[in-house]
Image (cartoon, rainbow, N blue to C red; front, side, top):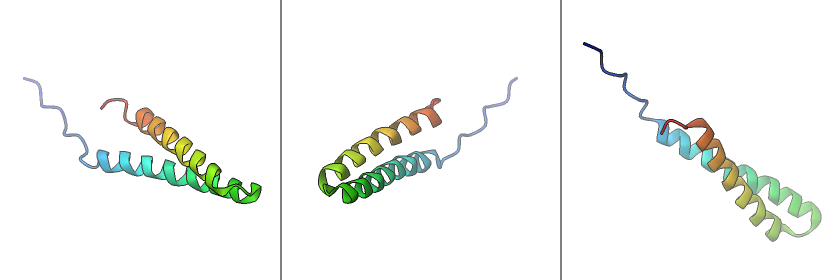
Length: 67
């Protein structure tokens, strides 16, 4: 008889959401700072949030490949 597999950590969803949110916030921060320096805050902020979301998704996919 084999033993049952160990239970998975129940906080994995919270960790994945935090990684995604941190990517969005970091992308928005970088885009906002660059936009403030250039003088076009809105467009750079939007682009930063978009790329932050994409990088957050990529980080979650890399971290949680087994889901």
